[in-house]
Image (cartoon, one colour):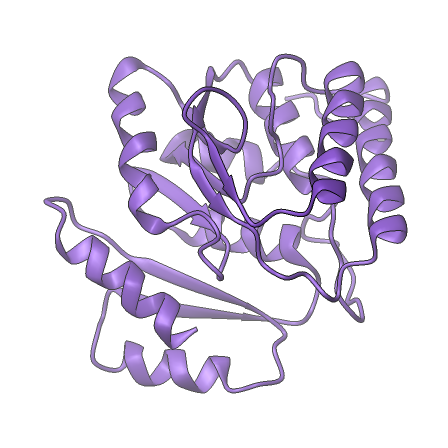
Length: 234
């Protein structure tokens, strides 16, 4: 985490806009909190939000709702998409997009080090997503997404799968929370721009391909079911 923060801050310091960095801790048991707090003591732009371990979807939601910027971006802590790719996303907000997402698909996208079976699993899942929930998006799962402030708050206040009632979990938990976020963005009428980015595969030794694939599929079905039951109405 210290190295990640150093990279993010170094990038932000070269930009002309003001910034804040929110680190949302998902119930870590290592020295993450202490190291971030040490850095935040000298950098007021850095803050930490401490959660119980409730999964990435819950952590992202908390961070997005706590952010103050006109544009709010979330990224994975391992920076699998380099923070420098931010510039590719920001330029689209001046063209009236409210949601701009990084994509590992499309002309200009580059994947590094990803095993073939992982790519195949991702494409099969994306087909399911496009059939059942979010049409026209080639990559819903890239952990690099930016939102206009008003759109972020309207969307994340309405998430159901891993929202404020999400329970404490044990172990790693890969979910389809991104699908619900993008489904809600579409339902609320926000235009979405998908932008090809560079992406580096991280060794996900804790990921269970079968269990996590089943959970993701279940999440997509739950999004569609929630919509049919009227749970996403204004």
